[in-house]
Image 1 (tube, rainbow, N blue to C red):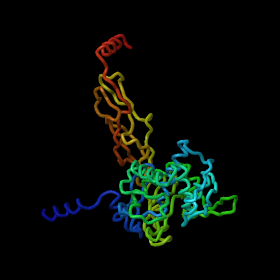
Image 2: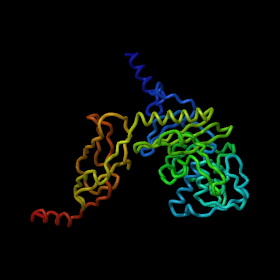
Image 3: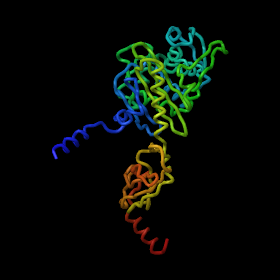
Image 4: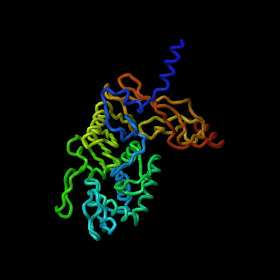
Length: 380
């Protein structure tokens, strides 16, 4: 009995969920980089992590946040892709990956986005930061506010490029996955991140994507590379097939080849082992009976708000059934749990998802009860 107790105690101390993915799939998935994450876009489910919360310098992967703010401003109507951006002396002074803007040179937002997404142009990133906020410093404040909104609790930015090594400029592989997920929710960005080769200045200056997966990995949708001697080789890679899109983050890889190999292994693992199961829309879910309410029933919605369930591949399609709790007495508030959606496939239960009231139902007054009673007596 003592041995059994010790065995159970040891098992209880083992990591659970995605954190144990490297151990569970060690034979199938070997990642060389010290920090890596694999995440599904729709659900945000974490499928693999290694050093996911280790603080790292992101280099140009920083520009995932820069691109996110630009795209959000486009989609909100604050700016348009046809707007003209004028390069300041400061923007034109930036080296590293750049398109050699000259002071006073003008490009459209569309061209600036292309240069940032395809060749990681530092000069264009700074020009856009100044165009949106007046200065890079104010833009960086926005970057940090947006990071906080996304739950990037282990990140802090001091510039919009990632060009400079600053101890106060840092993130983690997990946080990179969070901001990458937010960015690829905007289909607009893929117009730029999937470009392999293009040009600017009327064809006089060629652009070749720094993310080679765009060229040779099927379904690649982006997203952003990075390198400095301090950060080493970094990559946020995204790919989509059959309606499922995954985010593979690799930080501090030893080489471009190792970085790309790790990203490929993560994405291959996701596509080979997982699939998205679409969940019923709100209107397809049942209603729940309400006692003493102004309405006799309330529509239900999934408590999580998710529209997909990530499942292991194989077997038949998903089937759904609802288990409703005993009727609730009014008042009922939106979000009150009133039942469970049971998801099965091939007779095997995959998940039990909470169903919640989609709206408030107030309690009926005494007069309403009398009117309802009278209506029932006359068959209404």
